[in-house]
Every structure is written in structure tokens, then in C-alpha cells.
View (cartoon, helix red, strand yellow):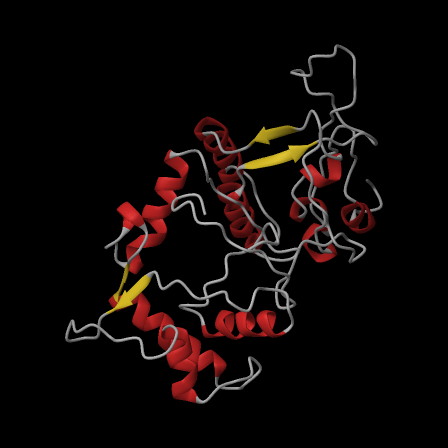
Length: 275
């Protein structure tokens, strides 16, 4: 481990999703009932050495600030014994886990972790992260809030390509200009404007490496005339709302032709015959 120098064994686990994050996570058998049962299962199946023992790196104090003793191998083992759980699929497992997590969060401190010993658990995440970043052994991993799929319901595989460019939409100036333009726009239906504002506030950086289709080569591309790095397809860059209005919002209203795009189809269908 980066901060303690301990050698940690690696084992396969069926309950992990390889598509989540890096697909590799730390197991905490001392503080997680689920992980403790997974450890014992891996030992029975020969995926981990039988002599492997849990290192307790947390001490818990109760509401009276009295140390909670470890009766068995660790706090997780004691909590499982209290509930009588031997199978991870037990219906009471979630209740068992949450009870221990709550006790650790409010009454736990780190131990046996060198200079980081004594840090309360509720502060440990931020402090350990800061230490890893300071030593250039950690950083920030951004993950989507949902599983990304294509329009054909196929999984999206994210990869950073050689020569990858990222368009920065997070600059204060760019956001201010975008918001000013948005404020001056008339949205039909009007409820589309709120989500568009939220999207503008949220977006930060977008990868850009499309090698086919229409688009504009980035001026920063060091190879003059090369169209290997292009902006996304034009329809993907435009807000969906203004170009896909319901027919009743366009009927009887004057329409302006957008250079290169023409009048949206829904508006053309509803336009007066004279136009």
C-alpha cells in the first residue's frame, strides 16, 4: 500500500463490476462484513493463503467514549456473529453493514498506519487523499453518474487516444458568454430552458477525437491541414430543444432560416402555405 509499504495480496472477486472505476478495489475485511465473508470464501477456495489474517487499522469507541473491544478476529467478524450471518446473500446483511459503518464513522479512529494513526474515520478519506496527492501517488477519478450507452443501447467504452484533445467548456469567460446567450434566447416550450442552463453549468471538458464525418479541424492541431482531430458532429453540439419543437409551438409563427440548416422540419410542416 502506498502510505504504509505493506504488501497486499490480490484476488478475484465475483461481486465486483470490472466496468466500475478501475475494476480494482481495496478489500476492508476488518470493517466490512461483506468483505470479511469474501476473504474467508477466497481462503476456502484457495484463491488466498489460509494463513492470511486481518490487520485491524481502526479502533471504535462507543457514545460514552469507551473503547469497543474486538472479541473475534475483527469488528466485522463480531458484527456477523451478532447477527448470525454466514452467507453474504442473507437478507440482514445490509442492516449488519450499515450498523458497523455508522459506528466506525462516528466513533472510529485509524491505528497502525504510521503518522496517520489517530485520524477520525469521518476525516480520514479527505486527509489520506490529500497525502496521496501530495506524494503524487493518487488523484481524482471522474466517473459518470450512470452507465453510458450509445443510441443503439450498446455499451460506451471510454479510452484516451493518442493525440487526444479535450475542449474546455469550464472557463469562467466561456460560461459567462454562454449564459448571456442563453438568457437572450426564447425557448419553446419554455421548460426546456432550465435543463439547458443546468447542462451549461455542469459541463467542464469534453474529449474530441472524431476521425470521420463533418466537423472543423482544431486550429491548435500541430499538423497543418490534418483533419484527424475534429469537432463533434454538428447535431451533437446543438441544443436538442430549439431544433425539435412540437408542431403546435411553431404553427402560425414566423420562421427564420438558419444558415446551413434551414427551417426545422416540424416548423416547415406547420408553416403557412404562403411561406
